[in-house]
Length: 174
Picture 1 (cartoon, rainbow, N blue to C red):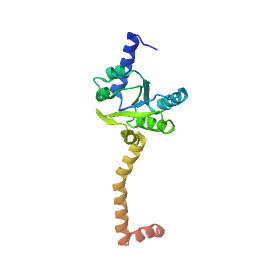
Picture 2: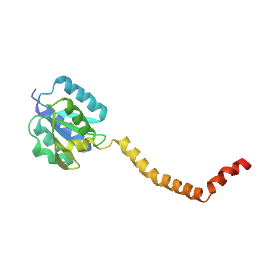
Picture 3: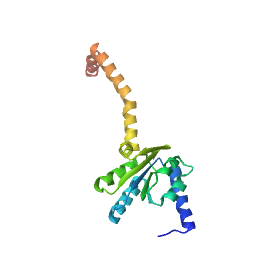
Picture 4: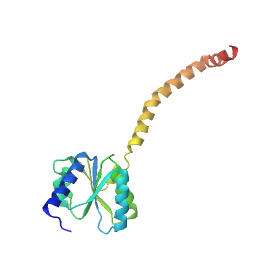
């Protein structure tokens, strides 16, 4: 269905707004994907914080102009599906990678993160990025490790000096 000028301007404005706030972009070829597969992908995208849109490449190039995704403008050829990660950087990569496993027609073509353009192989790298919760748990583990090691060292010194036995006997005498 052909869009008139005002509809095209709305699409470009919507994409530009999303691109300005997005963490990463994955563009994938989708020709041959069924309607049910696209519907399932859109549902999963909404759940995982990914903005998914099929739009003409010229409109997408105009929308990303002036954003960090401007580097992809020359690589946009053929029918493409655009997945912008709006909540965490790896979400779009995980979505495309997950659906590409069961659908050989869905092929990642372009990946862009922080103003850099990467080829399709980097979808795996993007998909392997930890989620926010995973990253916070890793940080908590790293921050807790020195305290844990210090406590173990103090306990080892106390045990070596025999302080561990005295401390255990003292409450029994009282």
